Length: 549
Image (cartoon, rainbow, N blue to C red; front, side, top):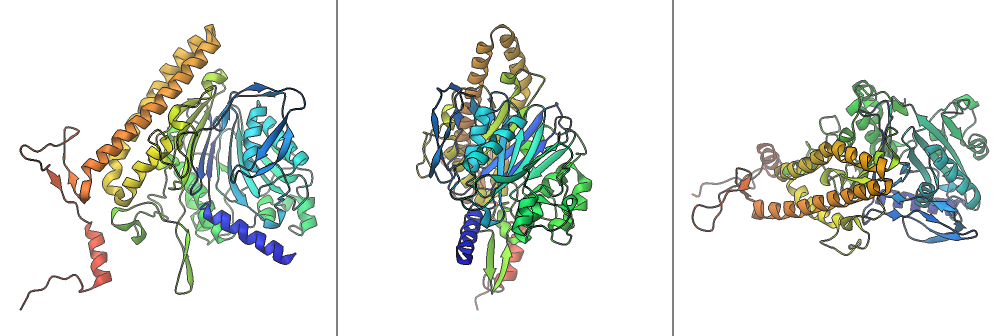
């Protein structure tokens, strides 16, 4: 039995590390946001994963219909569950009632994985979205499903939100062959922000606050039974019991949460820097009040963070190379002369398949109030385009059928964004501003157009809701296609401008053409002074010019 548990632990850790400590979620309460929105962000970070926008149309189902469940990560068939009589329209991770669910895997104790369970974490998300009108209803659907059918995945942390409230729910199984899960869900106060990133974040919780805290009845007793906890109930910490923190969880996971808090609550960032550096044991709070109201655009920018300007900035050391690249190749850890070292794992990472920022508003009809700002690939290298929650057809560039994880397609937004990103990363600080100009122009245009688009949609909705939904669906398709078309042109521009390591000059926003002949005016930027100084230090006299005798 000990050998089996050890093998399972190794397999889970291997999968966990292969995914690069995947997925980051941010949450903004409606009184903490600039426009009264509840905001949730999510990045699906997994090497080799093909990104697309999923869709589940609303439907009626006859009694007795069963639904097949496949593991979201591997595609493995897990079993059948009873289908609901009515299911709702789901586009990406948002449904027609603006309910949004994101996730981040924390793994936790490997002996609690139940490989006989039917409901994996991905299926829980998309089944709950098809069956829920509110965040609380989604929590009930998810916990009822694992109770009836078993929980297949390892420890998981979910962001679950609607236009009025946002929750973090953490869940872990009970071991092989044992149905159900132990879990706790905490509502994020309306005037606060929160984050979670591959590490269990719920410590102590108020068991008497039934409005803002939900939990399985055995969440503490099961921990006692397994020997994970022996104190009094008031001292119980879900995170300490089911996902004890180690340095990897601290630096690869909690550090991303710290970076988010540091952006919007400077005192929190200053107070917990020593914690994420491993010099303090006091955990960060589950949620904090921001210094100022937070906008959708703020969260889009936050999802692009690489610790720039902080003590963890990865653009300033040797690993960034001569062009200050804020990315590191996997794996996260490496060994030199018998000593283990690590690379930082920032919020934005190259292995993302897709990313979204969900905007949920109670002041508008659901069809207009719910916007999934969606992008393929890394948040830093993509364009967030608006996808309205009643969209009932996936925009062509976002469709699953356009290519796959081993098939490039010029029709696939995923591959277009990756194509451009892979050009930029090796010469990052030389090329990134050209990309940023196009990115900001598109996203600013979508943001500035939003009020007018929604005003027109609201007038239509008051006369004919179906026409308003059609109007917003068409707008969703148009913005997705416009962004991808612009990115193709950007890729063509980058190839031409930065060909062979030289940089062609610009004039009035256009590449400068030669006055005569076939040679364009260009510059040779070479390497930075700092990089060349380090090169000489490392190589000594090897490259020193000599006078021939």
